[in-house]
Length: 344
Image (cartoon, rainbow, N blue to C red):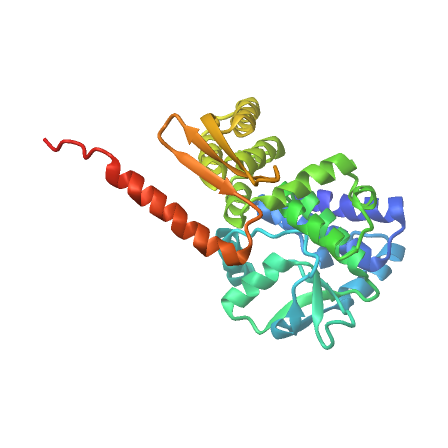
């Protein structure tokens, strides 16, 4: 019974606060239904909720209910600005099993766009369409909304996922980068206003896209253990020490052995090691060469570890081979005069 009251109050609150259309009320109901189903709570059919509404409200919602229709699964295409990038195969299988046991509880939300003629573009319901396809279903229930633009495609799905606590910063990273790359939002400030986040947060999240896909995938799979603070510092470690070291620290986080502070220290240590770099060996002596007119030709550097480096410049192409032969003659003669070491 609690589930029914929650569902009803959710729909009524949406209508009173925002005076949304009947279609919008159904979308609000969709979010609650999915959240309750995923939590294991009983789901109340929308038709049952309608019976409890005042006549004025009931008429609008009944119209919206009749707008839900079956469409061909083959005619459905994914949201080009889907806020989610990472899906668990296990949850798809679970939803497919739910379809088999209870049927489709909530319709997918779709629209029609000129760039996808004859197709329905998913606004919200990617997981449901994947479950239907895994079962080999030919049709799926859909709520069709026309007149949506690319920003709507993203924001409606984004807020629905936030309601269901399905959205991760790893999904956000890829989605936000695409939105900016495609010019859907002018800059991080405009995008921040749209999603209610500070531009600095937007920038930090988008920086995660420099990580290899397999690291992002693993972070998303372990989202309960890996937060933005962990991910950002692993990104810094990756930039400074490579994928192997970053993967090691990610494993430490998953196992509960590395806090954000520990990762910060590791990232700082890698930065220090990169800044210092390998010690440079200085030469012990140097012989400089000049032309008769005083113009520098180059130098011979002699190092304490037995190395010698000859560097010359300004040699005409016609003279290079002749010079190389003379240098080789000198070195061969010098090598023949060296004492042969005793062999034990």
